[in-house]
Image: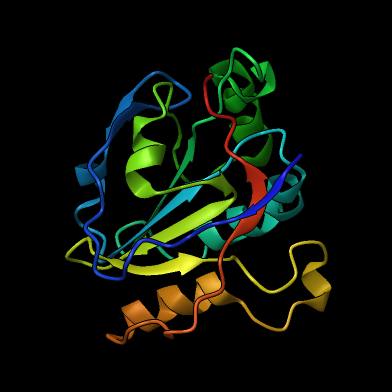
Length: 183
């Protein structure tokens, strides 16, 4: 396990397009979420302890707003040949176990993760109605212990956008395991 921090793309960067299969094999596109003023793209995987520690919080956050206000999508881009626990079958099991309120997509070619600039799991990218990057940073200030957190960075960034504001300029990078790139 290697700890990495995301180097955020510049604010205002357009959201890259994607068309990826979900855990049921249905192709999901970025534009399927066009009705929502806010789009949250999360790069996660099954085996990363950083992701495992925040899964309950991600699911709860995904249930906070109706999908027509805030659309959430999770993407796994790990090499499933070397990490089969991050492959489509295991992804379907995890999505069912946690009753994900958002689609969980598989980026087999890893092209989408590269286009977004994702480097670790979890990694969060929040886009406004024009689908320009408004926030790229951490979930909150304590990935290990939700009771000890004092800041809910991702939540607050979403709220700012819904209130017609921009998220705070000081955005702390995501931190987690490296995406398992194909060799």
